[in-house]
Image 1 (cartoon, rainbow, N blue to C red):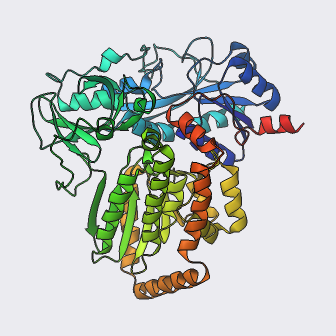
Image 2 (spheres, rainbow, N blue to C red):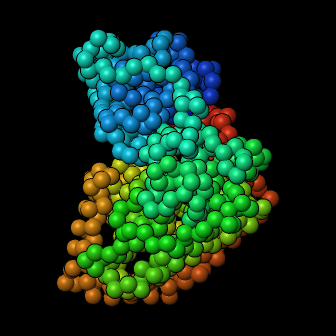
Image 3 (cartoon, rainbow, N blue to C red):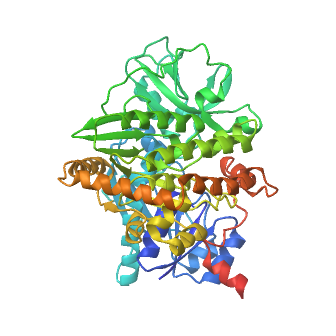
Length: 571
């Protein structure tokens, strides 16, 4: 089948569907939903057998859905309708939710149903649920719908609210007042649900330091207390605010009244850098080594000769401060008597490289870009030159750009089956990239494939990455069981009888590689190119970064995503 992905943006769900469908043999092209004329043009040029709409913000033109089956992916249970499905599910504390694949018609979310899947809800942000449960359920429903469509015998079921399986209902777009926080009465649990229901976008409207803001990235705090609504502490970018029965950490804010770079979503203490100095700094306060409950970006624990270094950076973005703190944590972990070091990243993202929002907010984005890439390079070098133990990058979540190549600095790279990788930089204004990728990538996949991966600018699945040697192993575990699977695998490495031979071979390989071309040489050559990106006459990187962080709408679909447009241009 020829499938057109019609989408507002090439987001995580669209990317996952793209890799799943292309690797399953479908002919797939992408078109951004810019306007009706562009959609009609794409249909005329590509002649798809079906359109799949994983992420839309407006209706598909009637003449299109009447001509071609259009399958809309709705992040709600059967019968749920409206533009804020997942927001309401989180805010209302739903226990089970789902995804419905339905056919577009004249009424929003009311078309015939081709497939659906349900899942148990976690206590998590809307954005995290979307990246995991919603995405996995969407893959299931799309596959089922396409198989049923190809069978020729299946008839989709009309939406019937008299059917006992139809548990959803129409709900309007969620409003700011629906999740407005009353700090004098709301419990921590209710505050968390309100902020988490708006995480990613649009954030919860509130006030900090007398200024209107939007809040994101909320975490529970079990120990600290204060007057309800009062700011009582800060820690590594986050602010702690008291509730009637405890407190919550707020990791990210957007200042509503700010202009220019101040309008960005930023770490809360950076957004209000001039106002937080008097708050107690809990940066060094020790927290439990149990799984994350409170806000803590970096955590380390050990078991059976294996050390685990977890770093949960919001959206996988890494600032200078975060890189330097992670480097210190890594150096401390290296001093511990363990045989294997596992770099876990976070559950939603392993890493996406440079923190573009922090860079955009800097006095000199070029200088901040330079500082950031050098800080990531310092961390990568430390991992590469660790020759006295085995290092493992374990990818629970997606990785992109410099984050992929930082993972390759480890001896072994394993990933969860649903992970999507973007091993390239060029989408960010032809950025050249560093993190020693010119050493690490060809070493794994060869020079020719390295060039293809970086030039094509397309995502690949973890399965494909393992097949071509980019990573070592795919663990077909879900997000919950992935870490225990990694623990068992890492402990097996640590207990091997030939472990000393593994270390000797690793040390000798690093010595040989260094004698051929020193790491400093790779870094210098990469940074020479990066310097041109940051300071040269071509502003492409700065324009692309601005468009990305301020979510400037697309004016066209990039040709690398739209083969139908490439062919039209060539003809």
